[in-house]
Image (cartoon, rainbow, N blue to C red):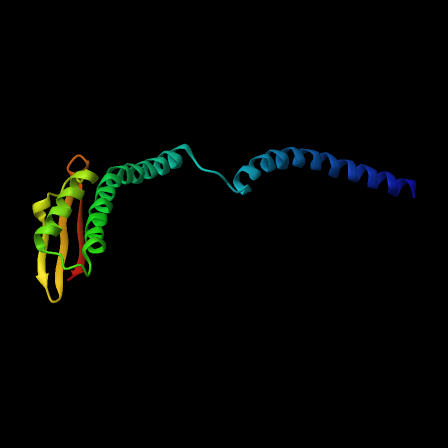
Length: 156
């Protein structure tokens, strides 16, 4: 029995010594495997630069368009104010035009002149309308063109 155990030990030593060599090779292979097997996570620098560039373009467009919309809100307020001021009070076209001119001065409306606001007689009153386009340069030869149309009816 001792001989069998010895031969087993000898055999296991040979196997063990082969395994040690195999382990060295397999360890170097395993050390390379996790990099291949491990899932990459995160963002590369190039990906981050592209993302920041797109966000920057959108932010710049927002900054360029903000004054245009703020001006439109002023014009809209003037047109709605004319409706609230004169609705049902027997107003005339001249009185409405004077009101619009006065409010344009107070509100510091730009890009649209008082003569561009139309006051037209319609059934039962007047229609006050402000239609205009505003072109804003963006980058190089690229521009934004925004069309606005605000209308309000003033009843007599």
